[in-house]
Length: 470
Image: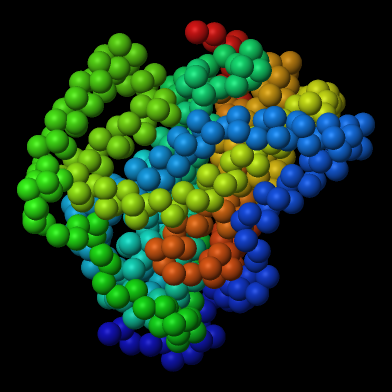
């Protein structure tokens, strides 16, 4: 048991600000769906101002409502596969071992912050579940941890570096010709991951943001005497269950469910496809959205070993996909209203009028971050923004691949105060978005100037490249 600090005033300025913001957000934060609904209303009002009728807007909204269903399913599978891998017995055992490392409340918050960001570079879906389970285990071992501070730390991957990693929605979409809307493809062609995620400029952003975020998480965590613990909030984490319910078949018809035979066959067949694709396209070009999900799915199968364990994990992951499935059609409808209202062309002219090759990256960053308050979706929002941002980049001769990365770095910023992507983590922790938002807002205050500076200064190192059409 750690000895408690005798004076709450020992907390530094950052810790006091974080504590105040956490108390404020507990009272005032709305649900994620409200943000998307407000965006529909806002775009509709803009379309009316530009001369569209209510009937026109309704037709545009409904006609495009289902356009992103394939992409929404791909996003849902990122959550499902991330959950499946994170809740497998080998990974869960790893989490338990990691949970023994931190010994102090502040150390625990910083520890979770680091691993949430490191995991998000592999998969944002995996990061949310991995962090949630890690938080539950740490709370059993370390006394005096503020559940709001550690919860916000577990969400940091989604608010900082996830879009700079392997599951970046925008980067994966632009590398996947089948996922790019035809109107967008005519502007940009395909953009390989080697031009976005796998660049030294991207690595610099990742390293800087991880150091910054972990430092703020450590400094802002309140002392043990001032912390609001999970127990104080009436949260009982108890024992985290794995997906395995029983270990052997009880009826002849269940034999294949509890045997690894089918798992090994499926993984073997899937491995042949992965090897073939990498051999023909190379490891970078092969990493598009479909193949990324496919590889994670095969890994999840293998880690769960039997079909029954795998299916149990999948069943538990489904509730976490609800927000994606219900809100992506709204984004598609917004895209339809936006494209047919003529606003896209006006936005291109607007950005051209206020931008130069030097200032365009930072203007894109500010705009993408602001729009992200209303459209909390990395991939869905990119579909809305990409046509006019990439068209403007072409006119200004700005590297289009770096525009994707500017978007990736800055669109994560509003995630820190938008509750949409908190949903899977909240489910694991048993908390509300308002519980996490205060410490996330504190991170946002520090992240904004650093991220905008990085996307601006690093843009100077990249020349303009014409689009590639496959």
